[in-house]
Image (cartoon, rainbow, N blue to C red; front, side, top):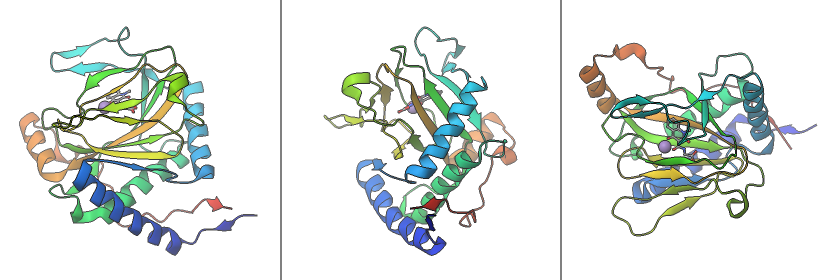
Length: 250
Ligand SMILES: Cn1c(O)c(C(=O)NCC(=O)O)c(=O)c2ccccc21
Ligand SMILES: [Mn+2]
């Protein structure tokens, strides 16, 4: 039987990790964390995503462009579904999202100048591997409130030389690009605004990812006033470290 990694051990790990994430975000605006949760929890999350897919909950992603919704099946093969973590069969996804929340909470005020108090639900995405990718875009080009994009990848043994599917980021004002392999148990953060245009290169194998966008409190409030959304419509995670049973770790 495995030993429980004690809550204290994990807290210490997250504190150190948050030092790295805060520094990396302020320096580069892009941050990669490998082996975020470990093999076991990663496998649990992958299983839940595959179950979601087998239950047919994924629908084709719509490309919402500034000209309103246009169906884009021919451009993007991605399929998406939204999970808030309370649905049956989403315990591991919920553990992932609360781990993301906790890590960002430990970053606290160091992620200047944003102050994060809310986020979207988790968007589970699957590229079927038919050679489609995702056109180059900016997640938040018009100050809709989203400040940090957080993506968790689930693809075991992914090798983009074989199966493509690289995330390519073109950091604004820089000559070099960032090529991110969507490998299993990898966590990625980047600023959601125009600093990080990005694209997903055509994928030739099934490619899973789970994305959460974190809101900057001020920007989100202003965006709501512009569109008169009820301010309470956001799911505000409580910022106390979530008490949840830690997975058995060998
Ligand atoms: C399916 N999919 C996406 O894959 C990305 C995206 O940037 N993905 C990056 C990645 O998976 O590495 C998106 O930004 C996105 C935005 C709205 C709807 C669907 C979307
Ligand atoms: Mn994107």
